[in-house]
Amino acid sequence: MAQMTKNALADSLKTLLETRTVDKITISDITEHCGVNRMTFYYHFQDIYDLLEWSWIREANKVLNGKKTYNTWQQGFLQIFNAVSDNKQIVMNIYHSVNREQIEIYLYKLTYDLLIGVIEENAAGLEVRDDDKKFIADFYKYAFVGLILDWIKNGMKADPLQIIERLAVLLQGDIKKALSRFKTNKTYQTAADD
Image (tube, rainbow, N blue to C red; front, side, top):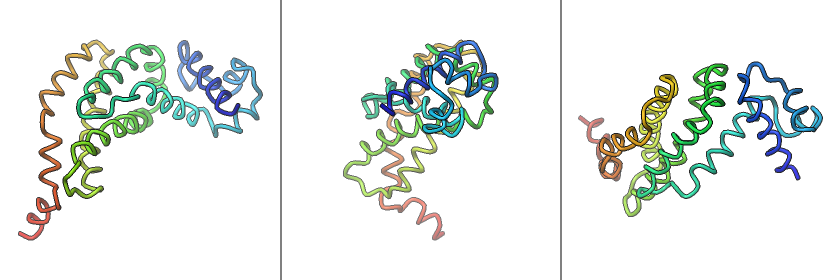
């Protein structure tokens, strides 16, 4: 029952975001649209931004379901672009009312989850520390989020498939190479010893 209520609140927020920016939506608007009282809202979420983050993660899990491997990462990123494009008005209303940092946080969570799956798969059989794998995932996460934020800022005009194809050329084999360089941490231990 609690999950159904959370989903209903998220769906109401999504519907309201089709016509308004986040800063123009109140908790009363959401609960009225959803048919629940304010206390129900506060039982599940601290504020609208908490609901927004939960909604974003819920949608991300749907989008990336099964697309977290080396062979499917391009499809996963393309699905992120397509999901943003399919919800263009909602995304633009969030983009224009929430500071860029908040959107970055949402996108970072989404892309990190995809990337760490790819990195873990490529690291199989290699002795690479977890913090080195996280470092690699963070590096690529920042690059991808920068690309998608520019795409959003420029009105989502560029073809996502072309962006992903160019990204694939750029990254071809690089994750595996990075993991090999970090293997047993010799790369930066040697540099630190010099």
